[in-house]
Length: 355
Image (cartoon, rainbow, N blue to C red; front, side, top):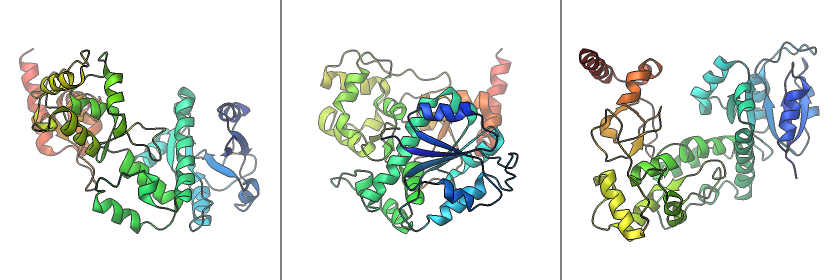
């Protein structure tokens, strides 16, 4: 059965409505009026998501408010019930989208944001992400806000105590718990890792002929909870246990170079088409453990430039490779320490001096 989606836009042509409908949604367009209560007449009991343009004051119905006001109205209405649904900001105003995207979870309004250009360039990704959020709300209700069941946590492992306490501190609100799971647990590098980080930590290039076969061997380590249909993630504790049980109980994964890791994995699995990752130009170590925030290239954190952000206790720090820092310092300078900025400037001077 198709999900019902309300699309709110004051200047929308039929093309955008058709685009959303072609993704398999039952979509209805609402051009807002100056009376907020009219919105509730447009919502149907089984509406499962709402997509909003940011600017809503230029239409023929003379609305006097923009998307945040409508979003706040909807969030307030469903604050303490089980009828809330994902709200998505989709706008041509790139600056506004970036403002919300920088600190999305603190806005208490939208589940995710994107530009209309991003939507048009990858509609399938939009559908996959929106469906994942809709299913997240449904699953949270199904499991009565039980975090462990919602993320399908294996009780053979220990969940970080702060995750449990932070989740418990969230009131029984669908939006806040769904956002907490997505933005604080599933998406960051921490108790879970994505495929790029998995590749870095195993030292194995994703271009390897046997990469998919290696993924099959660690399939039991994959995350299966909410949002797993949108983001492929692996439990790091399970990867460590797999390494200890199947590859090398005596030598830790972290202590080895990519070449050493690949050699051991090949000897234990028989996957001869695995090849080690090659380090970047300015990297000294191939003891890869994370990825560059900009390029996605594997790096050893000791070779990286730490990004100064607020991290939860279970999240790992993010880094830029020196290669990316040399090219993208202007973009990331607010997140880089003065000491690291100085170090990068010295590298630039040396490279210029050497021609």
